[in-house]
Image (tube, rainbow, N blue to C red; front, side, top):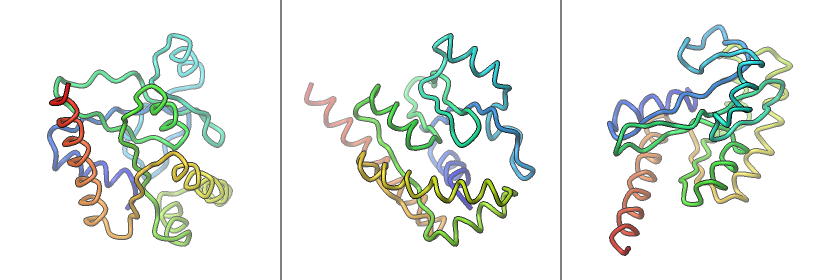
Length: 176
């Protein structure tokens, strides 16, 4: 179980979290829920780029993906399920954003997860190469790293990071 499952559990457990649904131009994977992304064609995505409709967007492998400018309910903390380059764009706009990199316990575990979700061998090989560079970039950018070796433990670790970040924001707000 990967990032999507972790996010799903976080959303179930914390009513103050609000998930911003990303857009993608890639086709839906066979095992993927219809609401995992907003699946659009390249021209619709490019029109949204031209209209400044994205908080962040990237070309990832051979498709586009991005986060529309979020409109969360008042008092919500926004959750973005994005790649490291998208996180870099968010950090440029929101310098105090909490960035968390969810890492597989090993390359073998990651390969198995990609196979289970139905990715073809070429995509798996490309994704495996990409992960190593993403991990290195995340470390340089100061991401919090959570290893997803146990789903419950990973969810709890991220909940603790969120609680700490909320406290940091409360303290900063009280000082101003």
